Length: 121
Length: 191
Image (cartoon, rainbow over all chains, first blue to last red; front, side, top):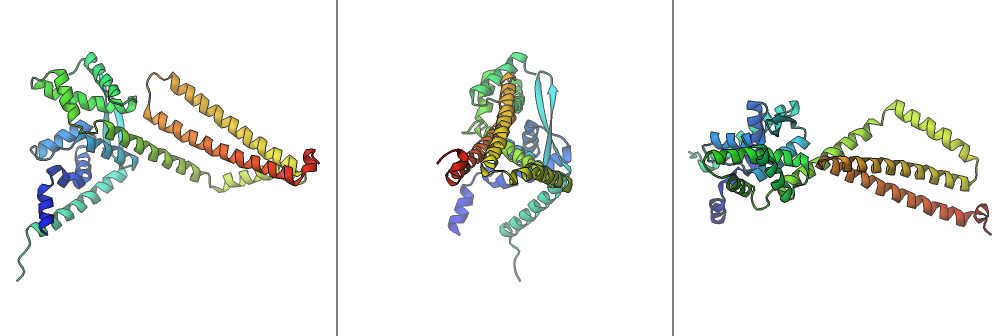
């Protein structure tokens, strides 16, 4: 038990957030329609007031995997002197995002039960 | 907004960090450009901003992005191949194939085993030549493209795998011909 608590204490924030990245990205895409990679990183940073920073090395592999799974689709547009790739949730992706967010909520509730155990009378 | 020269410098930067394919570079360049613009707005120079943004990609740099894209394309192509393969299994297509195969094989049933061996070899040979022709045409097309695309390279790699399989079939068929030669030496003009 002591070792487990010590391990959690040593984990940095990004390790704690790692498993939550997928529902976070899917939620943002559901709420904002189409988004590009940098916009996602900045929006997460803004919403969480800098508490959560999505690294590029984690975001793009995730977006490519979601594209491969048919959860998101992409379109490329010319923005001035460069091209920009936008990601949008597919119909299946929208359905999956609801499930993913609900799983995250259940996970948060379970964590709450561990962190704030209700006294048993 | 970055100038065209600065965007070109970002493409060169990606290429010098092992991102050779245009379809991967496009997304990375846009990301780098956005991040560099933000840093430049705070007074950082272009190259210092670029250095700092690249560091944000971690120890692996762009490698994780390239590997993920590669893996994702392979899975996507495999899925597409599987879908194409399954789409063959419809009653009209199977019936037509059976009719063609029967029309080709029935006359051979009444001919010698040597003719059968040569027939199989010729069919496989023709298929092999046709596949090589399409592969070489695709290769020439890819060479003519000014920009290398990872999506094309992965597709090309998958096509070569099917050629390897075809060569294996060819080799097995060759063994069959040798066996036929041993079994029916008189048919091959031997003693």
